[in-house]
Amino acid sequence: MRAVVVDRWMEPAELVVRERPDPVVGAGQLGVDVKAAGCNFFDILLVQGRYQVKPPFPFIPGGEIAGVVREIGEGAAKPSDHRAKPSDHRAKPSDHRTGFAVGDRVLAAAPMGGYAERIAIPASFAHRMPDAMSFEEGASFPIVYPTSYAGLVYRAALQPGETLLVHAAAGGVGLAAVQIGKALGARVIATAGGPEKVRVAIEAGAEFGIDYNSEDFVERVQEITAGKGADVIYDSVGGDIFDKSLKCIAWSGRLLVVGFAGGKIPSVAANRILLKNVSVVGLHWGAYAKYEPARIPETFAALFQLYEEKKIRPVIYGSYPLERAAEALVALGSRKTHGKVVLVP
Ligand SMILES: NC(=O)c1ccc[n+]([C@@H]2O[C@H](COP(=O)([O-])OP(=O)(O)OC[C@H]3O[C@@H](n4cnc5c(N)ncnc54)[C@H](OP(=O)(O)O)[C@@H]3O)[C@@H](O)[C@H]2O)c1
Image 1 (cartoon, rainbow, N blue to C red):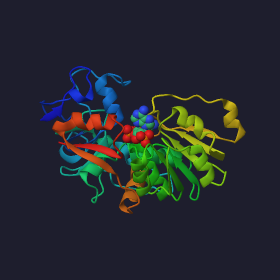
Image 2: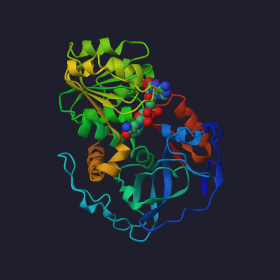
Image 3: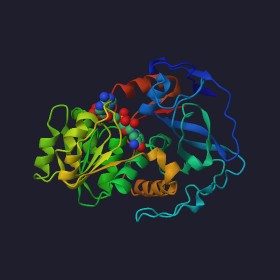
Image 4: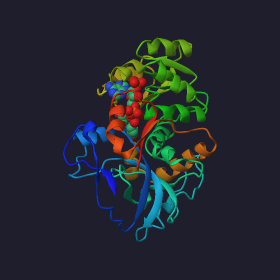
């Protein structure tokens, strides 16, 4: 099969496609023909050797895929998550993980291996896709949407009618947060760098857009909320954006820590948390598999329902053939893209 192969630490611009043996499909696994693979910022760090996980060479990057099941490993027809019970009002029992068959259209997040024509993944990682979902949409789904849903619903307890401020709202997790926030009945204010990204966030459902490169977002949020501030602030940027957010958060507001795309991990003086009853809450979607696995099928069931109700829809900035993986990751790293960048093997 053709795959993007990393055999030394390199810059994304140096990535090339090579021939590799097909992956062996083990017990409990699915062999999947990859139809589309999502690109993520951590793929860039992974190939540069700057990610917390440093796989042995050679490896194939790519942490999100959508494709068609071509082979079923022993015992994988019945994955073991049938015990999962929805505990949230939005989620409904779903069969999207109850037994797979050859030909099923699935999406999955996997640590790596997605930038290839074929992948073997644990069946427990896979979710059967809604019929209406394209493969490119499917490959754009399995990290950013669950991250934003878990952050807003489980951690920040966002309520209908509340004001949600989403930073970097045209980015991967940001756009998903705008759409989910609106679907949950919140009034969404979006910040983003530049007028084009602000436009993208407004098209995705934000009521107000602020270009934080040229405007003071604290002042604008205070104006928009008549001095009350935002009830929930979704922060995937960190640094100064986090610091300033504490100046425009509402009484009993929740400041959701999702990431540090700006490169600086902020710290906070505890008195500022005390003064306005603020909760600073963290979100680590990847760790749900270890600590609260039942939340995973519940989250996907709720998101697939929102997708089928046409309340959320991945925004795809660009779709590149596998051979142009280097170009795709360079574009992603340039901060010029919005939504998701995908590869199509
Ligand atoms: N906690 C979790 O479970 C979880 C899950 C997934 C992702 N994340 C994290 O969330 C963050 C965003 O991920 P993503 O997939 O949304 O990434 P993305 O699509 O690349 O978007 C990141 C956004 O951050 C903004 N940004 C601000 N400063 C930046 C800088 N110095 N370099 C690059 N971008 C910068 C950019 O928007 P503007 O140009 O508009 O400022 C960009 O659109 C990452 O740190 C990621 O690791 C966390």
